[in-house]
Image (cartoon, rainbow, N blue to C red; front, side, top):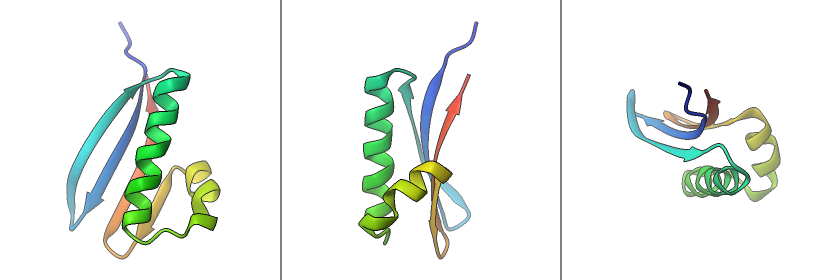
Length: 72
C-alpha cells in the first residue's frame, strides 16, 4: 500500500525542524505550497522568487532550508 503525500520539510542548524505531510490532492497541494511559501518568506525569501523556489522545491538561506517534495 502506498500513501501519496506532499511534504514540507524545514531544516536549520543541522536539524530537521518539522515535517508536515499533506494529501496528494489539489487541495493538499495548495496547502503545502502555501506553507512552503510562508516558511520561506519568514526566513528571507523575496516574493519575486516564489515561483522559482516552488519549481525547484527548495528555498535556502544561510543554514536554513525548506523543501517541498512529493512521496509515494
